[in-house]
Amino acid sequence: MSTGGIETTKEFVDKLDLKPGHKVLDVGCGIGGGDFYMAENYDAHVVGIDLSINMISFALERAIGRSCSVEFEVADCTTKTYPDNKFDVMYSRDTILHIQVWIELITWCPFKLFVSYIFAPVLLNYSLIRKHITV
Image 1 (spheres, rainbow, N blue to C red):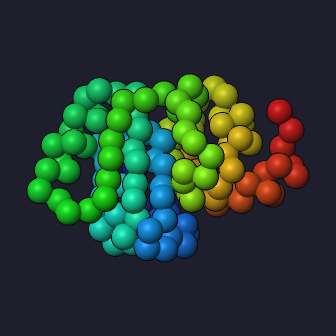
Image 2 (cartoon, rainbow, N blue to C red; image 1 turned 45 degrees about the vertical axis):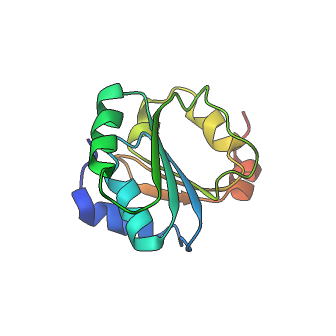
């Protein structure tokens, strides 16, 4: 579970500069709290993925009766593929700490990326990453 609750979610998501219609991939979405927040408050379309069937089940239950644009699926971000330009933003809280190939994940990401973890929230732009990280 992510630390900081809704206040931290608000703080991190505000840094994304989301616009209505933006497509967001949430890696390690858990029960979907951040996804619902982005969809309901920014009119974004959010796809949340997580390795845990239990977390995705809870997220799907929480989605019942909501009119926001969210999707959830059990998926491994290190093997899951999406068409080019499917997402405007990739968001992840804490999960990056558990991904051994996180540098590869970040460097192939062709869109604005927001990653937060225990040490500090970081807002990264793909072009800047490519200049400073080599895999």
